[in-house]
Amino acid sequence: MSGQKLVALTRMLAERTERGELKWEESERPGVFQVSFSNSSVRILHRDSRLQRGSTEYVISIINSLGVEVDEIGDESMPTEGAYSLMKQMYEQARRKAMGVDTAIDSIIEDLESGIF
Image (cartoon, rainbow, N blue to C red; front, side, top):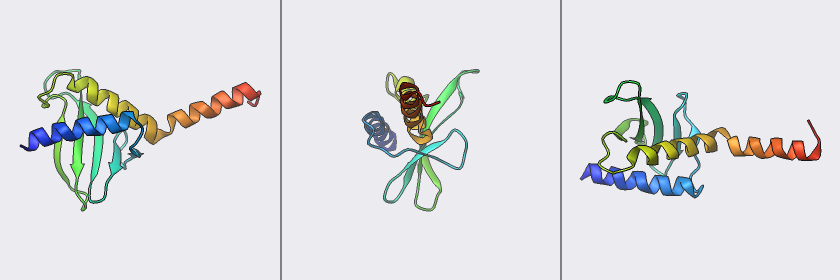
């Protein structure tokens, strides 16, 4: 049952990330991004594939209120077609949000358009 819940959670996170509804932030670990909820947090990261040498696996981990990882699911263990693409896209969107990429781009475009640089 836990696996099905993690798949459902991953889909909900992906949908809300796509709509810009989640406040992804940098974690204390480079390349790991997190979003906090009332009693827990979710982190998204990538690591070397455990199944295919030279490939990447995207992983969602659940962190409890004490900061302990209590569960995780990676695209390689997700019984869903398109899991890699779904999680890769969510990782990239979470990274962009946490790093303020769109804000930086908008600022540069504004400077270029107004001649300030």
